[in-house]
Image (cartoon, rainbow, N blue to C red):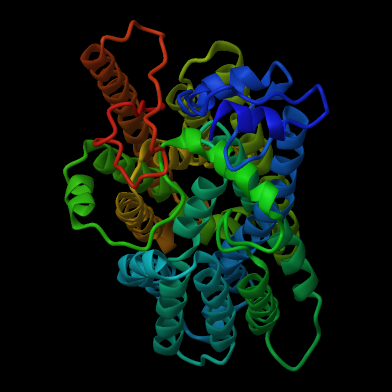
Length: 520
């Protein structure tokens, strides 16, 4: 479009200016755009639309209210569904179904075998169909298979239902990450991931409150059956809502008009990651498997979720062994959930503030800092005598700190991978690590150690945290080295920003796009 056309279309509002040439904004990277926004005005001819910083903030807030709130509620159900077995255990399912030896551990782990079995097919389906439709359908199935568990009268039947439940839940985190990367800039993503992952803590607290309420039901069925029926029914209802209400992507949705969609498109241009494509590209699959970042992220998720496999399945039993009754145990999960939420939101806010003020990378460093809380909790669970009930309970609460680190690790994936097919493969492989960690975790919790808060499991958690810290250190230096290498290739001085390429919405991988810089 010519400059004369820009002048002709210029509105009377003096607070809005148009750029004289299209490239003046397009060639800026994300931080350049953010710096320009600090002046209170942004100029663009992208699709004949002009907007101010106030417009952009208002639009981003609307995205938060629609997208993040929906993902947040999804995450509440995602967590509660996974922990229903833990509550069923203290409500008597082990006795009613005559579970012995490692059978409870297998019931905990089989869920993640289902997760693994359907993880790659689900991620492939994400490439072919709208993520909102797949997510809604799968959430409905979460609830359906949960209700089926209430009808189980044997170990084998419950094992089958747990496997199928895990298979349909494998859509969860990959779809949440994909949605976040489609709607938000790389700078915005850690905070948004942190916000919706904070609902994990809310889910922990809500599960405790819901468990307390269900424990008071005096019906014809055992309490553990009501746990499955009530939560399963709520889950199915939410799945139907998501299927019809969640927008497909920023360009195809009912919540924003054409002007707002153009503003979103312009804002997301700085990502250099594209929005969405339905073409499966085999060369991007090959590149993903040759990328060291994928294996580092896999290991971080594996080691990070061994503790999760312990606490999510045996947490109620750890608390119950301290002398609290069944209903008291459910209520004591509420402060645990609140602590998790506080850790997550503080971690992402600190990361956002440091990046805004200093324009430097701190994600790995902050993730390591929060892992030290988990190290302290695991060490105390292992070393503190069982008679010190308060000390043991505080140690258990401290193990929730790892959730903050996991959020930042997930944001490393969304922010550092470009190419739609490559992102799908990365997400699937990363959550393979998530599953394997959750499979391994329960087997460190030996039933004959329950009275002493599972010391073998505490030791495994401690080792896993140390290994995760090592992986974060390696990732930090690898990403830093890659950025310096690209700066040298392009003759860019340290601290100077690389210019965006013109076609920021092309489906290029981070390896193909040499202007891409990694966040660490």
